[in-house]
Image (cartoon, rainbow, N blue to C red; front, top):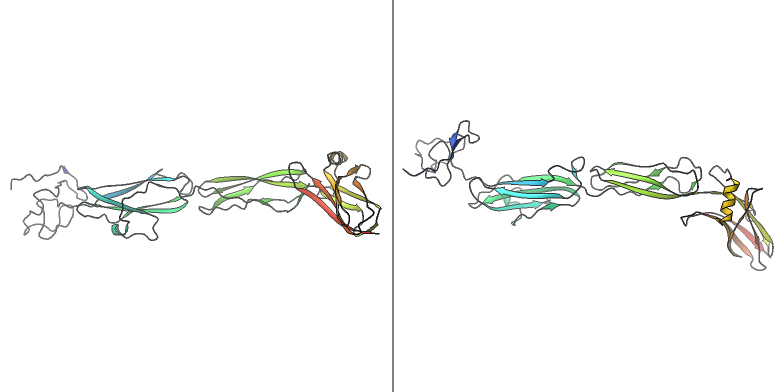
Length: 346
């Protein structure tokens, strides 16, 4: 034959060890060898089909498409192999000796697909994955003459875009001035990559009032969360020095109510501090039950280091009454309270 065999350039065609000239499937040399003398495989080791060997050292093969899955960014932007942002996905296919007819893909199937036929019969439309969790993408293509790519190509990656959740608590329900051993726990939770580190700062009990302690947590992907946990450092109400619990008082009598304020060790606060609390009406007396009394400001007796209120009982209303002393703090509705019961008789 004098037809042009459409030879390619003389080059090394893998896995051959010496250069050969590639021929396309459209070459007149395809299936035209002397079948009686043709070798069973070509120079590269490619098997020649019985009765259909090609002329020359290169056996033309109709190759399937090659699919690639590219992630952006190419490497995880978090720690420990995790992405902390949405992952861009590009799925493309080329055919070395023909035209790609279809590329299929699937994200996170319930079971890994075995081949091209197991993939959804639709155009591949995955462009981004942003949901938290471990993901896997599978893809494959076929060409116009029906050659199917095998095995499938796949890529696995992990996404955690959510910082840990913190729910701080203190080791003590009530925190008093000068109290030692009070600690804060971050109680961090991360349901995706898991908590890597967490902790809280020191709990300050040196002075009364509203405080905050900072708690932080970092997950295994590198996401960090920080929470300011508020708490109140209370005075300790010492007393009642008067009246005696469950004591009896007659109608019309004056009930002297006496308490003091101290720290966790029962050490009383300085006079200047106590006087300031009294002048701003931060410590109040009230009563409920058989006779009632709306909250009233208590006075401070520096000689006895006590807060005092003289409750004048009315002429009616007998039975049990509950007396209450409460301390308020700026910036919060939280109060420190101490209650006691007395009996009012006729």
